[in-house]
Amino acid sequence: MVDKREGQTLGQRCADALAAGVGSWPFVIGQAIFLALWFTLNSVAWFYHWDNYPYVLANLFMSAEAAFTGPVIMMSQNRSAEADREILHRDFLADSETHSIVTKIADHLGVPR
Image 1 (spheres, rainbow, N blue to C red):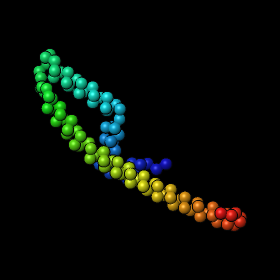
Image 2: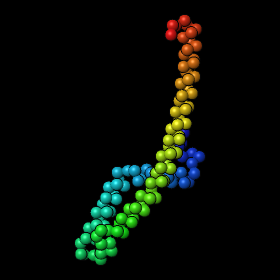
Image 3: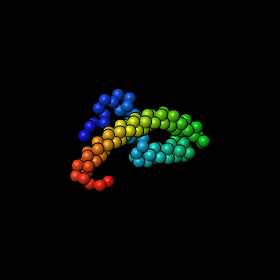
Image 4: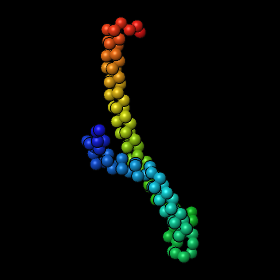
């Protein structure tokens, strides 16, 4: 089996790692817990309120995260789609060759089509 990472640049490997991390349940659950703690600590009077309601700082962090991860995930998906197209093309060529061989054998045996 061919290693997918072979021939990839550092940026491509980082994009794949980021896409795999951000697109996982542990990340989603961890982020939900982090935001719940953020909102709780900023709503309860036990600590200094560094980001009062409507949580503008949290909104800024979430927007920045979306602005940076979105394009990186798209780069990873585009490269994955390109790799899939190459695999499909190789499969098509192999299928075409197999069809040609089977047709020749069928003709040689006199099998009607």
